[in-house]
Length: 240
Ligand SMILES: CC(C)=CCC/C(C)=C/CC/C(C)=C/CC/C(C)=C/COP(=O)(O)OP(=O)(O)O
Ligand SMILES: O=P(O)(O)OC[C@@H](O)CO
Ligand SMILES: [Mg+2]
Image 1: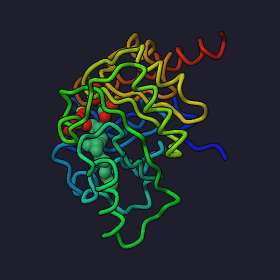
Image 2: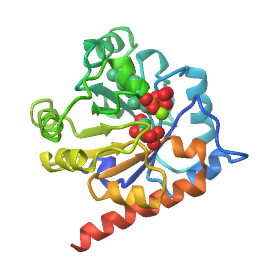
Image 3: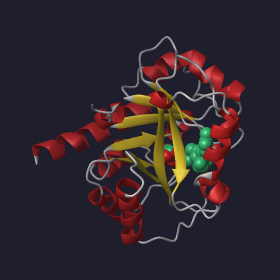
């Protein structure tokens, strides 16, 4: 069976702690042409803020996923297509590799495993909140990142590997090395995608490109350009 993310080119990450741009609404957000919405951020997330975004998106037909940054912010809601649960492969603090997950499973009143999917993060921007929080080792060569990606797929059975440069545009050689290291797993790339050209450039190295801050800082028209950029990159690869 094909997993939904295998069909995605573009993912929009909505930070529940941030406002939308100008007077834009979630109807506008859901009409950007993105393939899926991921709701998540590292700092100042609460279940109330999560729920507000879920409620605003529930009537629209874009696939909706929660990406919780800790067990306390998980929301049980049928409007969600699923839960994408990070595990940070290069974390310095073990809590973010399996510790949080153990606590979640211990305290949860039963989990819906059918809708629960892990993401193998490799966090590479040392200035991002996610890197600081997890004490990630970001001093990695393309070969190191490729090896983490391969370990994630081959030894830990991960279907999604996520190269995360949150807040800054990443190194295409590093992202390409991670992509080349994978056989079947899907490579997500996120960080600093801000226009058509940056989406097209990184789209050539990743299966799906994640756009975050741009939605809140520049709005839906700018996001729509990034959808076109990554779709054009993938059309070029299909023609090659
Ligand atoms: C077991 C459960 C339910 C959760 C654990 C989840 C883990 C391991 C999280 C660690 C990494 C993390 C914080 C992921 C959240 C997704 C993410 C990277 C969001 C983007 O973060 P930033 O852009 O750095 O944050 P801000 O925009 O809030 O500054
Ligand atoms: O906010 P940006 O830099 O677009 O990053 C997207 C996403 O990878 C963050 O988790
Ligand atoms: Mg962010």
